[in-house]
Image 1 (tube, protein in one colour):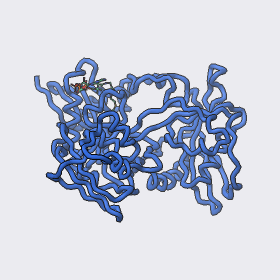
Image 2 (tube, helix red, strand yellow):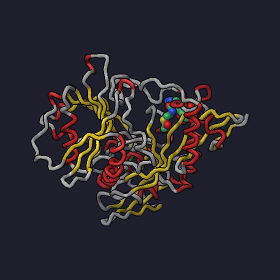
Image 3 (tube, helix red, strand yellow):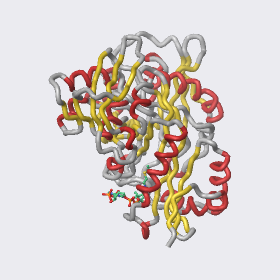
Length: 432
Ligand SMILES: CC(=O)SCCNC(=O)CCNC(=O)[C@H](O)C(C)(C)COP(=O)(O)OP(=O)(O)OC[C@H]1O[C@@H](n2cnc3c(N)ncnc32)[C@H](O)[C@@H]1OP(=O)(O)O
């Protein structure tokens, strides 16, 4: 038996897709009570396996895409597993961007699982990302127990909340000098990228969108979910500074009838943000608003006269991060305070160059250095914990309490927390 882990050849691309759950109509994520989509179903609606034509379309597009790096597991020439990394840029603390390999499209056929094929594909993808100069990897995890062993750890989070219309009363504010407009998909496609570009500059965790990111926006109904609706906000000068899209799905049950589902809402300033929500939370003939992929630190809560009216129905990790090249990644973000930390990493089997003791020095001008040192470390950090700390959304104290950070000197965890924490929290509004 010959087992290989390598990129699929162009004539193997459709076989490669056939091993992936989403191409087969199999579920792609775990069931959950309050599903990520707005509806009440715990799993996404059933999909048919992709047609031969669909597979060809994906293959043609992905073969042209220089940012798409597929990998396959082949047994005697037959593809039994697949994964891919997409080259992205992600916003990091300080507002800069870092090159990142986003792991996606992962599956091993059910007959070949638990034989180490994913581990081998992951190692090959890490090695290739390092060669391309990507010091970070990220992914969204189908199940929470799989990816910690590869050094990933939650870096951004998302929240699903519901708001009953009769309780959704906003605190008074100055009148909005701008305006709102309902538009079609073609207009939304034009308006969205510049709004997202500005949001992305100011939000740690946001990704530079892939080409074609908004191509799928449409006015066509999606079964009982109905058509997508698009709402723009313009400032007093007519510049678009906020966009939202939402649906009004049909429901067979009285309990879920009258739900307005907000798919996404992005605004570059608080006035646009408030104006978009003001319309959506008081939409005639609805009774509930559901937003399924929102940041944990949603300011709308604090615009309500009754903050408790926003009921969180699900909160979990979103993107997980993994530092592939510790010194390179750490010197590409900036830090809240100047300082110096010496920390040890050991046990990183997949990226062994990360092991050792490092001295991280940050200064007022936000430049940082990270070099090997023989000095006594202030703490030991697990490779995975560094992924959570990197984006600044995870408490160093929590990680120490849970045993992921072991302090060796007094005040080490306080210093780690002061230097790494970010506000607002990291968030990313779309995945990959
Ligand atoms: C980033 C994304 O794309 S998320 C989508 C992931 N895909 C899916 O969930 C689809 C269904 N599942 C699958 O196709 C496969 O089970 C995969 C891809 C998750 C894992 O592939 P495998 O080849 O079976 O994984 P592999 O044998 O390399 O396992 C490596 C380790 O992870 C563990 N592991 C693998 N899958 C799971 C799981 N679902 N739950 C818990 N542990 C798991 C293995 O036990 C093994 O543990 P070890 O390090 O202690 O030896």
